[in-house]
Amino acid sequence: MPMKPKLRAAYEAELREAVQAEARDELPRAWRHLERAHILSQAYAGPHVYVHCRMFAFGWRRKDSRELLGQFARILVAGPGSWLGRAPLGNTGGANVGILTPMPIPEDLRALLDA
Image 1: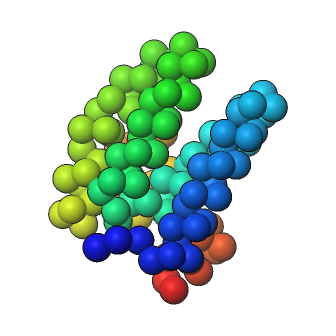
Image 2 (image 1 turned 180 degrees about the vertical axis):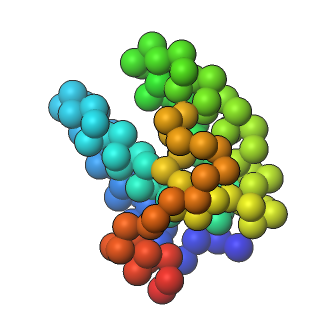
């Protein structure tokens, strides 16, 4: 099932914001946008895996071995997790949180996901 246009637009906007923030060396802001894109993508295997690849690349550029290992594992399980409906809702996707830990969804993202 493809993402609805409004959800796809929000997902892509978060990814663009992440790129722009990283280019300005606003790393916490860039990461926050990747996390938000992750939350929006969890039910969709392709976009979900893609966000984890972007998180892996972010970790690579930061030479963050913990994030690289965490993202490698997540890249392997993200697709099947989405296909099986097992992705933990609200999980922000970084290696700093448990791979199966559900988390609260920000209200603005909840509205997009519920639409």
